[in-house]
Image (spheres, rainbow, N blue to C red):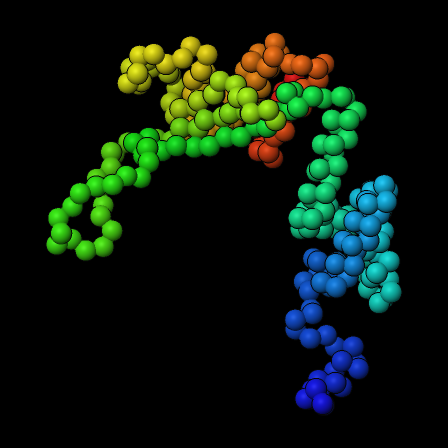
Length: 240
């Protein structure tokens, strides 16, 4: 009725998996086993008992033991959680909610960090006038300067922003770089070799953030949400 070849049925009876169900050794669990584990973790979390990483590892080993497979490695549970967007989002939200509740943080004091890069000479797309005989998308000659500028900004849950922190490529900041003589004094201009953030500038930005938000804080604590860039995990940054 299902038109399954007899050899396929014989292989399944011997325990041979299909190519679709075979997973790399580094994953250990099948797709079905991983989904079962994810749903079990979410169920525990919804009941108010979010499991520890060691518990996730123990549950995986129970599933493997049922089919006489070897246990997972020491880093498996952490890698498993990283592969599951649903778990990462749930754990992150719970961490934020618990932190806000524990310290009584107000929405004015919840800040999000973000950074973006700009290529010198590239402002935005625009409309140009070309000859009617040209075919395809028109092209315009761009300035030869291709230096990179990074802008770091922070905005709180009420939509308020602090002054930007701008990083240029070079060793010294020269005033004649600016076409506008009225550059706001509160804006911070910093330099790095390639115009990107590094550990030193990450710490300098944190001090800038502290100065600009201390006086406007509503409560006793401020919450700053960062991404996983290495400049936010230096020893000096964490100690500050």
